[in-house]
Image: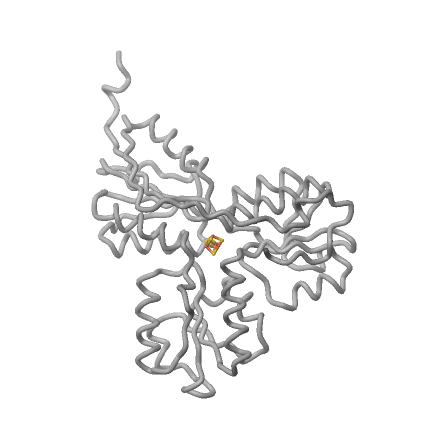
Length: 330
Ligand code: SF4
């Protein structure tokens, strides 16, 4: 008997682009390359990117993830995560005699430089972002206390307390909702008409493209699944964007083993995407599991093609008998 005759049909609409971005790819390569050059263990401060699977893969190769630098033995190599770190962290690493490698995404570093420029020109900075996220802590930590005030939602604009209403600039976290951020910027400009902004968008290309891909399919599927980790900002935004664009039945799962297949009742078209820190293998895993339960048809829907590559720190391309203490982002 043909097994397919007993299985229901499911069309999986794959959103493109999805999954790894250039910043995540680079950060993982930095840890892998450091392991190759220096041997295990290599210490990593915080999750290198917000994905449990990626962290476990690197742990298996000899990476040790720590919360703070006092957990790293003197003389060891430590990598800072893709989200960026406050300025005090590389200084602390130096004082502790650690070799540090900076895996901060260059697009996050760009925001750091922007904030520094505004500060140097005498402006106070309104940072649009989510409190507690490591990227926000890293950006706030580029400047002295009080130089940056955090704005988490449009409702917070009226309550903002600033030093000088006519001497302000704004920056944003790179992984926010494009639409919500536009609203917040509009509200900021309405209250502070002279506020300066970035020359070019702070929300990164990967976040923008993954949200655009979800918007393109949200109205055309019964349900949408985002592969990602709950602490991943860009993945969480994809679930929200799907809901805002007409797909109420949208969820995030870490990987196939977390899927409750009862959730598929009544679903004949599933949108599937992955956050910028989730590898394609986790998408393939879900598709493979779906094939055991459905007759699956795949539809690819690509809204943009990405060809962004970030160079590794130059020190990692040389034989490293001793890694330099601090490798700047290139
Ligand atoms: S999501 Fe954007 S900012 Fe974050 S690592 Fe990827 S490219 Fe960089």
